[in-house]
Image 1 (cartoon, rainbow, N blue to C red):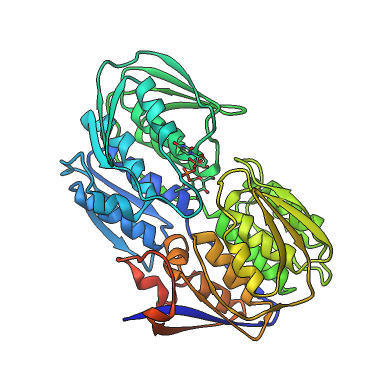
Image 2: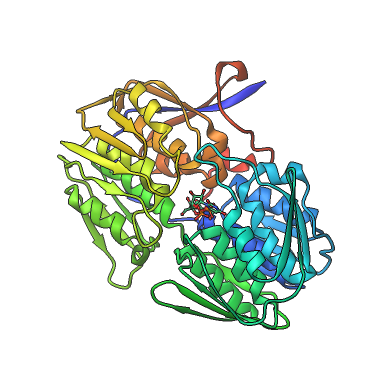
Length: 448
Ligand code: UD1
């Protein structure tokens, strides 16, 4: 059996204009939220990524009818005939985000049955925060082996729930569970990532009564019914970040007209600190980057929004690996999100990994090597590193890349990157999990 790998060669400066797909982290939860309604909804700007295809399978398993025009990014989901409230273990293992159907199923059917979502290489990623919030809402949650069964017992009435950590998924699940109810629920220390706020927009379009208060409180006053919607998913700030880093390290110059710069503040500031010229459009959408020829190393620490996004830690580490000077990178969100350090070291990067820190000593050059991407963002980072590595870099583990990005390599190629695809015997690679559906984006050059 063959597996795909990317062959990346040292590339000329990336130049040109590119546009973004809808945010992966928004589209998955929005797809799940459609279970709160009965009828046909339409989502646009939907990326043809493997995780989207996986979520389509989850919704189909529950009885939804789905039509996805993946070239246009138009996804029609009809939930009129949804009957099920349980997800098979096989499906849950494929994608952690399947856990996001739990809130909508509880709201619509009063119960949900699933198994623990697959573990993840970037950390243990438990769902205890989700379960705690559900219990506080009056839902009985029973854990038995790998199975999770949840059912409304006594509804809590009006309540103020305080999250000990602003978990993105737990906030989203609680919001969706509370949206169809008789209660008014206040979530304090909620996650306020732009993708969570896009979900809030969608729920409001459905007819939900939700108020977001600064800095991080969300009040949901439950309603009796929610209706189908049409919605264009917000552009992916994380895809924008990865593309900007690719242009920056190749000393290029790119424009992303739909980049949501209003939600990329800390990240863009770090690029400026490195010496790159970053010009933001005054209406908060659109960015142009002109790279400096002598980037300075900068230190940064990941944290929940509006801090530096953990999903850009790996690509930004690549930028530090070839910058002048020393930097310290601190990963505070996931406990095991530095596996790419080992791969970058193979390419000649000088990085010392100590617990949640990576200490980077910038070098003049990276060298091509065979490297393995172990999560979505790490895989993107390795592809980006290959653009400034002397010789040939082969990147495997592409199942991860394609889970979160729709044709990332194609976009880089259009900007001038020297990247091709090849197939290798499976035994020659050690890549992780396999994406079983929707590999169309790999070879189709999507016009975006
Ligand atoms: C989402 C994003 C992911 C991003 C992350 C942080 C999606 C589909 N994925 O993941 O790309 O990197 O937010 O911005 O939107 N935790 C617990 N118990 C829980 C839940 C979380 O301990 O019940 C821990 C996690 O292990 C992690 C931290 O809290 O260390 C943050 O997780 P969370 O914000 O929940 O991230 P996800 O929703 O899984």
